Image (cartoon, rainbow, N blue to C red; front, top):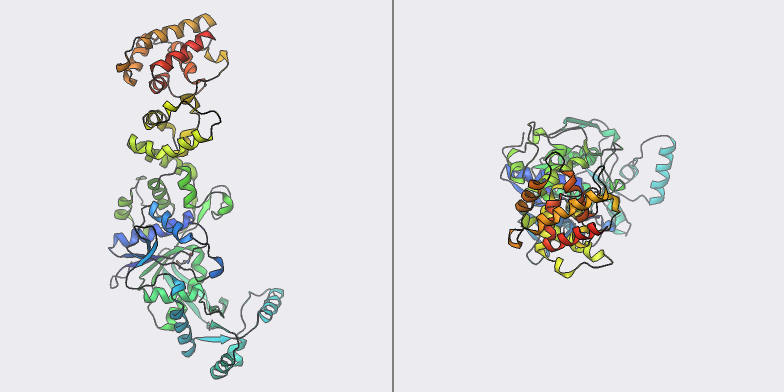
Length: 501
Ligand code: GLU
């Protein structure tokens, strides 16, 4: 489906307006996968000509989020070893605000060709025009007044006299503009529904429409994967490419990502949607990438878990979906849990460490200093990792690893056991554990010894009171695991405390 005669060149072209939306990460990912698959170029271009909306340091954050996901451009804007924004490649600059003269030159070229015109209408006139159109239930559109009123020479004279103007594209009033979308097939738009949109503003800044068409041409973009929200603008872009006499790149307008509850486009209102949010909560990049890849692309096999390399190998643009995809956070949690459990314990502890430290930091009463080290954290992580959906979950219900728990006496009771039986059970457990040498204090041993002495038909009798003595909780990891983490001394202390109760 791709044009074989041209080198594959794709781009991710974010406008640095805030944060990187998870949907934009997906757009970047598909561009990246496509470039990798066909051995092409993937470049990053920053579309920052809408100056009012720029938030400082946003470019840094955007790139950081992409890097976190493992998406690196081989050209364009990137962060160098010192963490500074840099550019590489022969088509630069890749930051649009540095290319204003280029856009101005091309906008004027379109005017000279008779494809665009100067417009001097004041905002007040445009407002009243819009009001009239609204009243008549017509779509707001510029009425070509300046095109009809002034010849090119007259317009130039006005500019010479210092009059402010914009440049508008002269959209044909009849006919249709159509193109072949990789995902949607033939798409057609009636020209009469397209407004004579501004391409160059009075301050000399281009609009997005002009800037991206010029850049996609000059930077030899062969294929554009972008969000569905750009589909209505596509005919404007096609018309411009044609007016310049340039080849139109292929387009793939990606499906929309929907909120599971509202069935509407996933947006900031729905809560956390930025890549940074997912990172902060402890989603692993592998999981996020895997999950979003499947939001708009269907491999048409049973496989659900894909590494980035597998995605590169298997990605096919003709398996991209047209209809919306539901963002199912439970599915992401499930996937993330899988990736968490695949991690080597040392690495996983490193990933969880920050969360545990923040947790300890937040405690009013501080735990014993001896417990605040990687070795101890690693044991906690080893036991708790089974239940983790996100790294941040590591701090749920882990107080008993740091403090001797408080609990109502009755919680120690398994089924109908009376105080005496509970006491005896705990004493027996203390004896078994007490006989294990320090050097033999490992999970297998602890488990084996306790199970050997438990009544196979009623293990709860021995294990329930013991577990509660350790954790003070109705639900927690097994007493074997907790005993292993706590160590012999602490385990025996807690059993004795329970016996006293
Ligand atoms: N700058 C546009 C955006 O922020 C890019 C649209 C396109 O890829 O053409 O979404």
